[in-house]
Image (cartoon, rainbow over all chains, first blue to last red; front, side):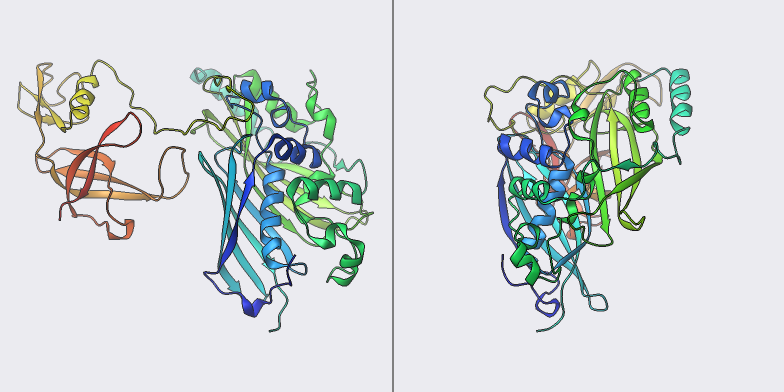
Length: 140
Length: 324
């Protein structure tokens, strides 16, 4: 992980490096179990198919985990996540790929907080649209 | 597929009884915040943040010691394995609420929104409890997944001292699934690329789509009074004649009104999507997409012309482009 970004180094419009997440069964099921979410649609294909999906799909906590990780990968060790707000769309189903992109949409000088909009797309469309508030240390 | 009106009213009054109330006593985390669970989370998320798993790097960080990823907040209080076991009796009021909807045919559930706020980073040894309140239940909504109700909850997380460490607003859709999916051909096959929503074809409109498929834009015409009608219908609304034919539109028109769709995004469509109400020079209006034009350049009165175009593998649609 890189050095922590300083607030002064970040500008509205900055883009985060894109990240491709291969949605293997291990990612989907491993994420669900690591978040203690044993809801059957996230580990049982039969349960997922009974809900109209072709295979197991990512649980919301894993999506949250990836959104948080995507922002701290960019912002660095000493960046502090304050708020993560996500909207879910097309499910992340095993076999697909989620392409994550992000953009700085606001920088609040009083608080040192930058606001990042994160998008995760798969072959169906938008899986997640997220807004993350992250506090960065000051200093050049 | 949805309920008769009386049953629906009864269901909705039962639903409202849950609003504003906690789903039960606070949920208590089965284990304190701990490094093995953090490590497993980081492995699954591919998260290499040193302050989560590397004690030395964590000591040098702003945290001065190991911390948990903030997005793990809810993981600390989920019950885990027991969530996989169906029980007859609901374990809390949230499950009772979900069961009530399931019993009325709204059997599927999907999480649609989650917002979390963090007052501080959690550290190994922290003991969490969480209280969840049902904030609101929507009216019945038609969504891309099916018809259902949105349920909003607010969960407040507290540590061993009773101090609030974070909160979460969560929204789920409890809905009637449309139809079971086809079985995937292989374990790792990606889902088929979704296509746009198909028009519903019936006796009154199939002829219109057949002409569109041949590349023209028809307008229904009443042979009784000469009125032009759109969308196609079985009887003229002006003179009640059922003697109907059609003319072919010149294709010229102008934007009468429009919206630019950003959200919600349905699979099969490109966004932003300009949905325009176009007034044809013949006088009827129809809703379609405006393409070949940046959304910010669209305005009321913009001259447009129709182009019958293939919009996906199968579907032909009369869309509009700027006339110039």
